Each structure stands twice: as structure tokens, then as C-alpha cells.
Image (tube, rainbow, N blue to C red; front, side, top):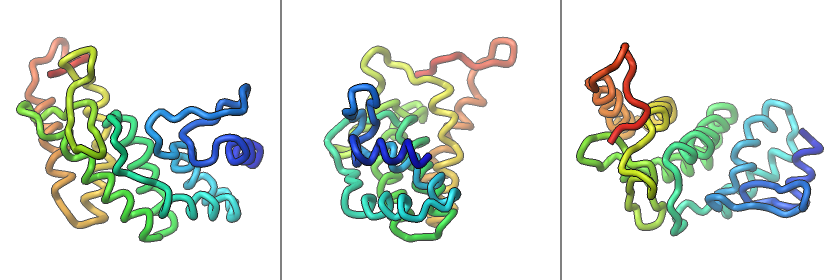
Length: 187
């Protein structure tokens, strides 16, 4: 972990991913994905110096109002889940504040006529839409974001997140099934 963190810090700090062979970086969403992914591991491994570096980056540099479409699924699991995870471990309010802001910015994805969330949402314009290649959403993606939104409701004591995700569960359970299974994609 020390080796990985040091390489990331040297060549890609603040960016989403390190490209170790070229010693450059890639930004998929411009949300510092590696930092958010690593915070709970750094904390658990008692890598205090590295954890502090990541934490110091979050408050001023994790900008959630970027004018970019992001994947509801990826950002929920990696960023919202990462922020909630580290919040539960350390109890530091900065992580809950960022998780709440992000949760609010992801909520437009749930404003679909079918109650099935759109796959993509722009974190600045707060407009959501289906993927560019299809009008459908992946069933696995819209159903595996349950934990993060339910947890966000519980820690903020605001039922809006859990209510939105509960509607998705209800809708999926109502779908016609083939051999007990729902389709891979749903609209």
C-alpha cells in the first residue's frame, strides 16, 4: 500500500487514476477517485501520514459541482460509498458533508417517469439522462446502489435518499420475470 500510494502521490495526486507505465494520470470524472477509494484502507492500516494527506485534499479540492456527466453507479459506489465508509470509521464531519453534497447532486437521476434512475447525471447542471448508447439502464447498476443511499438517509436522518432508492426496489420487484429473473436492462 505504501508503494502504491507513493507512486500515486508522485505522478497523479488529486487525479482519478495513476497510469503507472507512463507515469501519468487519467481523469474519468475529475473526482480524485484513488484518494477517495484509499482513505478507508489508509485509516484501517494506520497509515496516518498518508491518510492525513488524503483528508487534507478532500475538503478544499474535492469539487462536486463539476460540469461533467458521471455514472450514477460508479460515483455512488466509489465516491459516495468511499466518503460514507471513511466517515463511519473516523466520524469526521468533512466526509459526511461531502457525502451529503454528492448525494444531493446525484438525486436528479431518480427523477425519471418510470422511477428507474437514469444512468448518468451532470453534477453541475443537475440534469440526468439515459446512457448515450441506449434508452435503458443496467438492472445491476440501478439495484446495487441501495446500500449507499440507504446509509446516507440514516446518517443524515433525511429519508429522501432511502425513499428514492426504495422506489427502485419496488419497481424492479414488480417487473415481469423469466424464470424468476428480471431483464439485464430496464427502461
